[in-house]
Length: 357
Image (tube, rainbow, N blue to C red; front, top):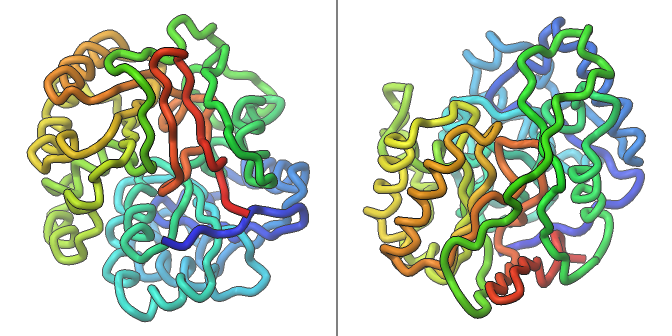
């Protein structure tokens, strides 16, 4: 597995839209402006890939153009980091244009940090199969262009770790979390989201001793759709053809990370999704499981019970309620980097840090 180098001040972000094309719509112009300002404050330049601003309808109809942008970003010598603007629901449509030897050669010859979350899980697991370690990380529109006064401090602290060679980074629970926005128009600029105090922190719901393993996972909803298909008729066929879902052997000895989407699946749906992953032996061969906070803590306790039953059934060390995925603020989960969980001292550590030197 190839690990990209750390990010440096002055580096250029290649902005890609690999599912939703909302970034190019006139009604998010104020968010684009904010995004550009915030990247500058982080010491980063930016470059929109050729098709990234062509809008929702165009990108929906032309997945090959989304794929072209990703290739362009790897081949463009000006681009140092590739960052997904947002998730969506049809990233899988880019796979037929990317899962080939030509693109693999491009990725291996020009490895760059790739960041995003949610439906971007498709890209992360595609890159995993192509041999590039990526980052389940905040997205540009939802996090960098957060409409409040600033990027959430917890999120910013985690993004700053891309610029260092810091090792032994402890993952601590954010003392606060923020409710999801329901409005994104220009009137919301500078308006902070409703803030909540964190009541539970990391919940060590099963396990003992010290567990170590490399990280692998993503959005549970996306993982589930890779196995059973989803809202699109050809989805199952595409996944079967390109096989981006890790094999049982690839899940062996991993620390699995999962989180639920903004659709806030009902508890019965969560059980169904987990049962599908169970049927592929993931929880029998992995070392541990870490779980992201559910959005707005909807079904928090119901989910906890379901995860606890899963952990006890498989004797799987499990920690619940970490700040990643469809919650705010968000931390960074680096694929294929080692994580250590100390159940006695209730401590979670990225022993090699977020990004290799």
